[in-house]
Amino acid sequence: MTRLFDDPDRFSEDQLRGFAAAYPEHVTVVPGGVVRTRRPGAGRVAVVVGGGSGHYPAFSGLVGEGLASGAVVGNIFTSPSARQAESVARAADTGGGVLFSFGNYAGDRMNFGMAQARLLDAGIDTRTVRVTDDVASAPAEQRAERRGIAGDFAVFKVAGAAAEEGLALDDVEVAARHANDRTYSFGIAFEGCTMPGADTPLFTVPEGKMAIGLGIHGEPGVRDADMADAPAIARTLVERLLAERPRGAGARVAVILNGLGATKYEELFLLWGHVADALAEAGLTAVRPEVGELVTSLDMAACSLTLMWLDEDLERWWCAAADAPGFSRLPLPEPSDRAHLLPEEQPEVPVTEGDAESRAAAAAVLAALRALRTALHEAAPELGRIDAVAGDGDHGRGMSKGIDAAVRAAEEADSRKAGARSLLSAAADAWADEAGGTSGVLWGVALRALAQELGDTGRADGVRAAAGARAALDAVTSLGGAKPGDKTLVDTLVPLVDTFTAEVARGGDPRTAFAGAAVVATAAAASTAALTPRLGRARPLAERSVGTPDAGALSLALCARTVAAVLGNG
Image (cartoon, rainbow, N blue to C red):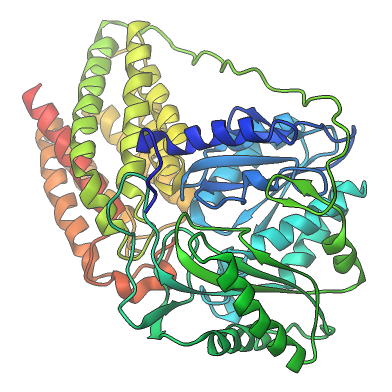
């Protein structure tokens, strides 16, 4: 259990402040994460890594010479927002371009992808390499769908070393992709991890069993097996990775035996003795093996084995010097200039003052957001429990953080007499930026699309609301790629929008139409229990999810009912 915390909802921010205070010679805090205190030379490629908190030394502990130039830090097990990724990249860039690298999770893909688009628009050449090393998360023929676990470190190490050599962005990207293509990981869990402030773990392993095929966001294994002793576990790990030996690979491998937070170093060293024997029996040479914690999952009792099959270039980069808080091979060099930082102040959100009719609509929007804040906080524990069945259990917490930020932004916009569009746009951006993760960015784009149709002048009538609802649906499906039947919030959003817009088109009262649509959406959300997930973190654990409705679909239905109640009382 994670026992040391102040406000559980600020765990990520509080730990980052303490981390930076402990390693000022290595890292400096910037909005969204950390960058190197000793700034790389002008024109060097900036390798920017990132993801949710709870994985130390990944990701902030890997910022330093020979490794990353910056790390984007999200909430616990939640992808950072696009704003955070863009901010850290701008702070880390020295004119040579930016390489983003992160584990292959939906929220990270979308948020880093949005940040990359913004940077490209600003003239900063930016590339992305997603890490796909976990052999348990998808079959070999679906390598691009695999998630990133401890192999993150191997890819980051290669990319950082290549950048340190002064290679151009094209070449650093090629090096990182080559490292990912040659990197494979497999893990076993003995006990789940516990979120700060929680009193139960995200999953449990039955007595006498071990979970095979762990994730690093508190996900359970893909199957349970009888508990084995260290020699048998070593054979299980090695044999599974040898089965995916790349064609033409040599006999030299970089090796990581990784602990995920509660597996003691002595246990890892004991296990390493057996892993080393198994590798030697297979005719392999372990080059500079790393045994310890490099990519953790809070206090999960678990371990994973990573092999990166080396060639001359990969071996040089793997063995190159590095100096970061969480990984070092050489004494600290003399300190030099501190990094150039972005200003802490964020630009003021633009607001257009609304006319009387739009201000009335803005008041209704604000009332709805405040009602949603109450409803989502009350539902957060249950949403988290449902999400933890086959995911990471963060949905309730993420929705609470998102709506809190949205209400604050809406209230600030309201104080400046914002129209409906400006007020809801401010709320949408705040939700996306503060919540992070898949749901955060999807709610952000949905509310922003709705806002554009409401306008800052004139009455926000049923026609405008229906157009906004349709725009919100289009924005969500375009960004996330989900379709009805994938077991996502889209399974609720489609019937909600279709029912509402159809009734408005027939001339029905918008308030009555939305109340009816909320009833339909609630039934659709409950029906997701019978579906098998085809997208997101729950996909590798699809069978576990059957029988439990999707947390995102349920929270959307809850929001629809809450808004309908506000409209009915208005």
